[in-house]
Image (cartoon, rainbow, N blue to C red; front, side):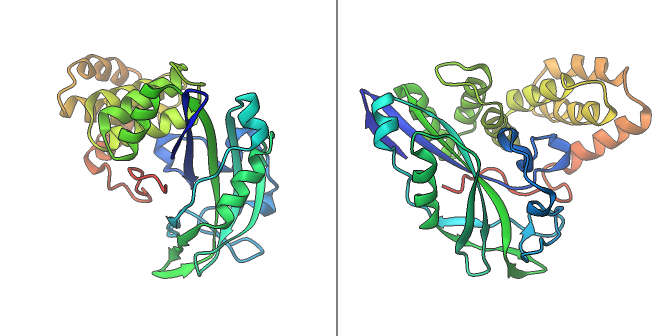
Length: 277
């Protein structure tokens, strides 16, 4: 999704945000970008809202975009060289048609309207519950970026499934290297690389979880990622596992090892490797 712009490359990143697997401790889509929707707007995973739409999770699979024309830059944003991210909440009906599109994180400069115009034309393969298509409530994050050629090429490679590019792109987003920092996108690309078995990505995921605090759940997540990285040949993981184990109970270590052995087929896990673009 690239267009030439002022000698740079403009990339529009479209990312479906469904309920994340609990052990990744990812940001909840109901609070993406700091938005605070009402309780009635966001049913619990697997439950239906008053309007009959389900939230992804607990047996409800996410919809998949199968026709997705690109949003265009607004003239105002083009002239100002403005970039940023907006988040849309919408319902994908049983027929795969989007409806009830609302902005939960506004970007302005006419880009919210451009994002809505594009998503209205999208077609989805609907989500399912018990093997049958159902209406699902999802968020769509639309990021408008003006990037240099290196980052644009990384995005192309990452979207094609290149784990090394996913890792580099994740690091770039997390640290603001040649691109505006975006923690959610950084974690998204790192997780994709880790899911593909890239040891250094798995190690970084472990470090990220270990740095989140001293909760047992954080330690179990970190231990799982370090164990996966060590299994795939990342030598530094052995030291980190030893240090982390000293802070954990035997029960939590056993649970973390079970998760590592079961990954990526943990209960409730949904595919993350492909973009809905």
